[in-house]
Image (cartoon, rainbow, N blue to C red):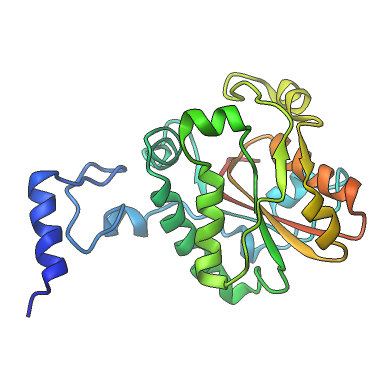
Amino acid sequence: MISIKRLLQDAASIVMPRNCPVCGKPLDSDERFMCRKCHMQLPVTHFHEIDFNLMEQLFAGKVPIERTAAYFYYEKSSPYASLLHDLKYRNQPQLGRWLARQAATLMQPSGLWDGIDVIIPVPLHITKLAKRGYNQSQHIAQGIADVTGTPVKLWLKARQAHSSQTQKDKFERMQSAQGLYLPTRQATAQLQGKHVLIVDDVVTTGATLLSCAQALHDAIPSIKISLFTLAAARLE
């Protein structure tokens, strides 16, 4: 028997067709944000299965990091880049939450999430948050929490809005992100000796995550820090 929910979804798809953002194919009623074929062919990094993976190497010697992982590879020319564009610029924060749930489920058997006390999304400055209407990293963090049950806390804040990193080289990105973030009073009071997971949408040079990790480590030397991003640029 066809459920009322299924009938409503089918009717909605006729009025407002949903297409896969990767290949453009119309989505079936039981396909959420991406078609099955594109989901199966997602360029997964498998960082969670690799000791001292490329993402860990990016931060080695800069700040103590316990574990790192990213779900899939990001390349500007790839059709999968549209996932990040939809999430970040096209008002689809639930896409980030859904993708993060897939990532969290995939990575859970590896023990990546074991011992994590708090998930902290990379913050947006209040002016950028007001303009965009949501923080995509917070929705990604919530997707991981949906699977792991780990609480999400907004315990980092941005001192000031910074310009887009897209057109900057590695040095310029590092310079613009330096000292940009600081922990809240709740963080310094409650994260002594705790293990936190900092979450962002994509890692390229690592400047943003490094600035967040340094801010927490400088304020709370006993803290343990792991990192997760939905996507990673090719880091070789």
